[in-house]
Amino acid sequence: MNSAGPIISFPGTWFADAGGGNSLRKNSDYIRLAAWVTFATLLAAMAGCKSQVGGDVMATVDGRKIFRSDVDKYYDNQVASAQQQPVGEQATILRLNILRQLIDDEMVMRRAEKLGLLATEDEVDRKLNEIKSPYTQEQFDQRLKEKKISLEDFKRDIRRSITVDKVMNKEVSSKINVTDQDVTNYFNAHKAEFNLIEPQYHLAQIFVTPLPNPQVHNQNNKAQNEADARKKIQMISNRLDSGDDFATLAMNSSEDPETSGNGGDLGTVPESSLRTTDPATRDAVLKLKPGQYTPIIAVVNPQTKQLVGFRIVKLVSKEPAGQRDLSDPRVQQAIRSQLHDRREQLLKAAYYELLRDSAKVENYYAKQILDSNGILK
Image (tube, rainbow, N blue to C red):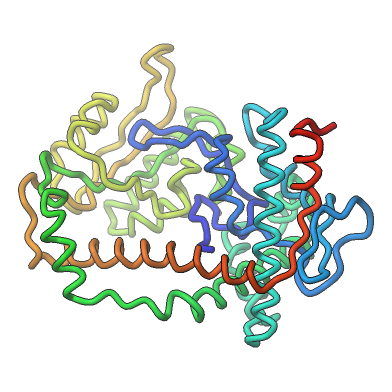
């Protein structure tokens, strides 16, 4: 039940942004069911209180009702930004997945009550303030309005997200132990994975567009036209030259919705991928040493020849081609993290199965699907 890391780190899917494209990143298809299931991992039913009156009961967990209105609320939120709306079987599967997650979360909430791990009001308020920090009050209220949710709905999701994390940390994650021998065994069995066939570039960027992007909600004013964009990117460049932190400037000033929230981090790309990006960016980055950043780069649409925006790219680090040894701390950490994540995923799956064994669950929606042969009105 890990939090999604998105551009805007909000619980559940209330504030999940579709995100713009970037030539240095691979974007997943937002409407794939797998993505829906991933985003749904932080969805919440109504914690510790009755569901909103009205609508058919779609399921019960130990007598706690989950109404159609609960499911529809999350369904509408998830598909609101999708370029293509799900229909037929896809729409039914999405609702079924959402309901399944609500059922799972309700089971965890019941377990949290027994363990005394329900999120406190102070924890909820701290998380809420953290989420609100990049926004003005007006911007935050507007986001709630756009998603057609109340502040209480939002806080309820925060409470559920914190509670689920606390239960999983106590019951699962805290019990995982990856030993040095585990790391050694994995390296010896997968040595080829640590032989880089080409150099790898870890990049970050600050991006400014001539038109304001409504998906970006950082604190500084967005450029309204090309002249504004040129002035803004020049101001950012001057501040970088004066020693300001790149990541902080990216968080406060970059207009790329995919990277502004995480300090402009573009991740690691192989040299072959870098060479397929726009020539101006490619040539500038290839001249950098780790820690350096490019001059201002004008990004132009190759088809229309129109200006897309301006960027400054930083080379965070560069990994040369060749075999990595187990003595490299980065190799050890990468293996340790991978083994931990795999075991955590397995143990959480097993933990949910045990919760299902001990809970009384009635999924009326699933029965309705079967009874109707999958054809629902």
